Length: 107
Length: 107
DNA sequence: CCGAATCCGTGGCGATACTG
DNA sequence: CAGTATCGCCACGGATTCGG
Image (tube, rainbow over all chains, first blue to last red; front, side, top):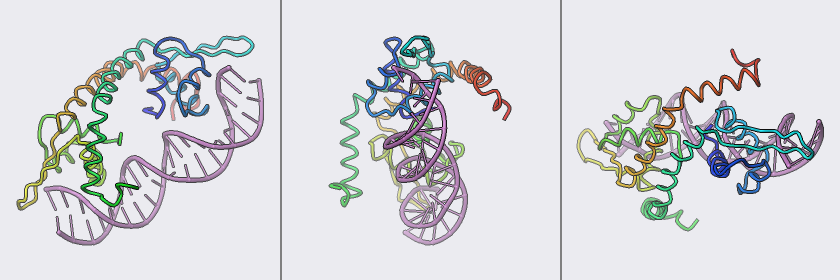
């Protein structure tokens, strides 16, 4: 799964174990459903470990595996690139649109 | 567009200018439509330049910009990771499935 | 050789409501 | 608190057809 939320979960969980609700709060716009689904897929791929503390109230923590930590490092190169070229791409897009689709520019 | 074919186009075009039909042949399973669409999006984002040679028969070449070359380099970290952990993930998946969904294992 | 236009199926994802 | 279950939209992308 290259799912929409996977990367943000990796980022949020990279520093250390994090609880379900903490994830939900730190990731803007994610629904409980998608958070669960994405976590299950990450767990399935051996990227996160799920630890249930049998307490009241329930407490579940998610933690990245070593493999996922490596993935996170590799991803940083990508995000760095994205950050560096954010403006360039936005300008290229604007220029392309004014040249090829003048009607839609202000829409 | 984080489209399905963008990365493969980057890889195919990284060595140098490449023609439309060459792309179509070197990328397994891509349709003419999706190739065109993806190329347009990459062009729009300033990642490829499209050069039309007014000859008969027509000849169109696509070439990566410097920004796209940087992206390609950054991507390599990811693909390297994927290659290194291919087996690990496959095994994690198989283990997860046999444990959580025994019915589907052979389906 | 290179591409645009149209039709249409699939599934990822969101909204909502219900549980232990 | 940490999920699960059900419903439905719509954008991505495949197949096909029509040009320059």
